[in-house]
Image (cartoon, rainbow, N blue to C red; front, side, top):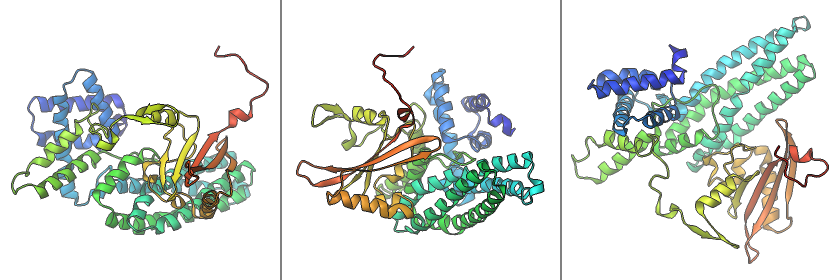
Length: 440
């Protein structure tokens, strides 16, 4: 069955069958078990995409709404039985724990691979290939760490718990460095060093599993409220996942609707909102063509698209955003208070960014070993001692050029720092001249 559930056509057909059963009058109580089985293996994005495809194929929105009602019922029943939201597939902590389970399995395979290479006479091509595959697979754990750094640490800092970003990030970097060491040792056919570094890697990774599950995650669950977890979940896709995809049982749209209902219930007369939660959740889930709440469906007053007068010319908010996102460079802006206010969400970013970075102190956005460099650059710009700071490095086969520029207003006051990163691999390879269009 599991291989079928991974098939998009199968999943869409099952969804259609469930909707038809509801249309034919079958009670929700009889349908929800099959729907529960389906969504445990399907992400929220996949469900939204399937709902959109069904609507484009002519299925009325009212029929999709029936499905949303089942989704809400399944969620509420499961939450009642489980007792804790983090036990539901889709909650960020559930995803982290699932990644840890998959990470332990990957690490077990890596250990089996490097143990075959303990002695020179065991270093066959098959054993070396197994080590290489094991390292590459376990390297996915870096995505797990990067998501923590960008989507969990910022909110813990806001809650007054900044130890993880100061301690764990450094441990993450130690593990990243070991991956680089192992890659270099394998490339140089120094398998003794590769094995030694792999054993160190395994030990550090196991300790990180423990610290996460016994310290970080329990603390995060105590300090962060449901609204914050919704925000965290909505920014996670920008970073990605290791080995697994989050489920959709814990759905941020449903959570948000429940929170809205609770607020309304607190303000409304007694007895007026008893059955409002499912209805509001359904309304939220069908508020956009995809069957999920569109963040811009009802824009806040200060977010209504309009014209912005620039130094030379004018553009709408949308045009400015599109222009920045389509520049062949990555841009980040830090204001005069050292807060990250913006990053360009380009399709092919060089360095990972997610919404959790917005509003964060720039010092907390870098590994501990780099913080003093960041602070030195910002202070030099603030004092007008330097006009640029630049670095270049090789990263994943790319030659990356990174520059920092101070930003001053017309009165010469320091207003922030602009970071510009660019993949200049192709530019460095240019020779001669091209004066004519050459698209053929």
